[in-house]
Length: 118
Image 1 (cartoon, helix red, strand yellow):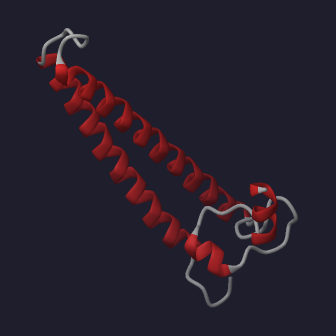
Image 2 (cartoon, one colour; image 1 turned 90 degrees about the vertical axis):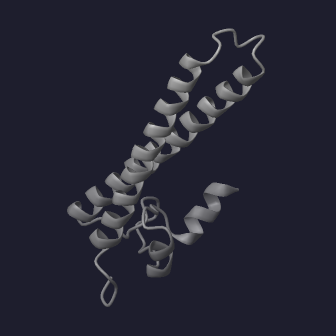
């Protein structure tokens, strides 16, 4: 990746953003749980109960996605350390710098990614 920024910098920035997102979602989830505990405990008859349950599940799903993203970032950083970052895990060819700039956690080149989505 000569002439391109060190992937550690981009991945580090992505990691910090993911950690901040996780922290914010954890706070939001805790706030929802606290609000639910303070509200009427009878979700079946409380018109807010369904909304609170939906919000809790929505935030839990977003938190899961953020944790998955953090895992992908950490895996990419490990590939950087091992020297395999930027190589397609399917065919071994280089992943274009443009693809890595757009998706720093990419593990496949464009042709292999296209085959996987079919």
